[in-house]
Length: 112
Length: 115
Image (tube, rainbow over all chains, first blue to last red; front, side):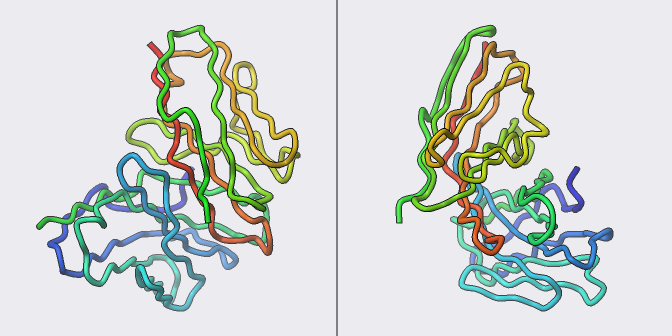
């Protein structure tokens, strides 16, 4: 079973920041937080990952709370092409299986 | 860099028939995964290969599903006989397997409809 909880759906206006929350209250010390997204009729796409520090790349920013029990994925200037299902996954990449355990994710709709 | 290739993209079969899916991972990627994604749900891992060996097949319904990766490159997933509940998108993914690479690269998937 997935170890994360996400809202089922969210809406965002084009050009505004999209903030997608994720709860992972049972995360262990070795587990990282990963975000993938899946655009309609495509396979999932990696976005970003982090352990405890905030991370930023060309796609998004990841903010992890100090207690690591929750995180927020930020798309700073959402476009229509960002409409997708966003998955938050916790995983220990250095111990055990490399598999990704997906939940149902958050369906983000970016509106014009 | 070419992505993960899968074929066919769509397949419709009747229950009790057999079907096979093909996947060609990114060149040089040692680890290959097959996921099943039922409508409205996230992908679920069926089987993971490291080169041509099976690492994890705990969620593969072995009475009807089989998979192979004979030369450590491309892979096939077979269902025989198919059931209605096998209707899903079958996704193939690969990763380099080096230093527990965090990125898995997914193909476009094969959409299977069992009638």
